[in-house]
Image 1 (cartoon, rainbow, N blue to C red):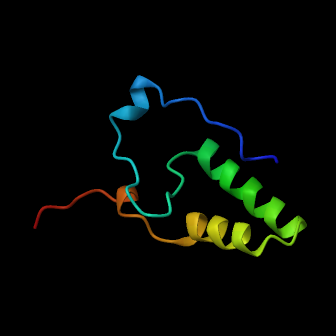
Image 2: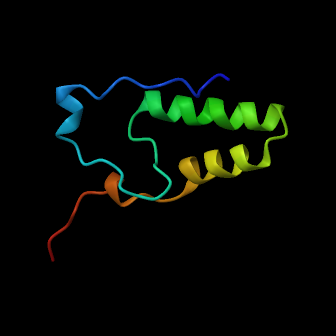
Length: 72
C-alpha cells in the first residue's frame, strides 16, 4: 500500500529538532506531510474510514512541537 513503507531513521541534523510527542504523530517536515497526504488520498480512494480519520488527525490537529516555547 503506498505511503505505508518503512521510513529510514532521521539524519543527525533532524534529531536536534523538537519532535512531535502526540498520540497521533504530526508531520514535522515536507516529506512526512507528503506521506500523510498520500495516506489520506489512499484512504479516500479505497473507502478506508479509519485511514482517513488518522490521516486527517495527523494533518489537521495543532501540534505543540510546531511552536516555539515562549518564556513569560
